[in-house]
Image (cartoon, rainbow, N blue to C red; front, side, top):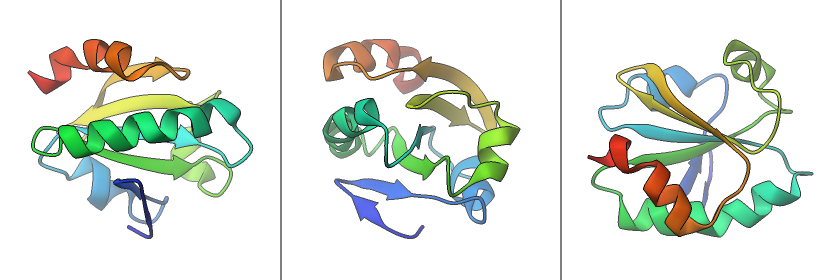
Length: 112
């Protein structure tokens, strides 16, 4: 993990396997880019969820421009793409920014 921003860790191609695929908790990965407006809108939403759900869910982000290997591996075509990994496998994928309440509703099955 390189940096933290609002409770969300940044991962890279180099540490994706250890930080995401090998994690014990489910991990929500935000595939993002610096130039992406909706990605910036989602940042405080994910920061709040990361703080509230720390015992049940880990949230990280990966920059698609700086980490092409992981981006290609999971077929990411747009940002923001949110992908939830559990036991090393992607179990849910959501595309686009959304309000906190809606995102929590969409993550209920993962948090259960």
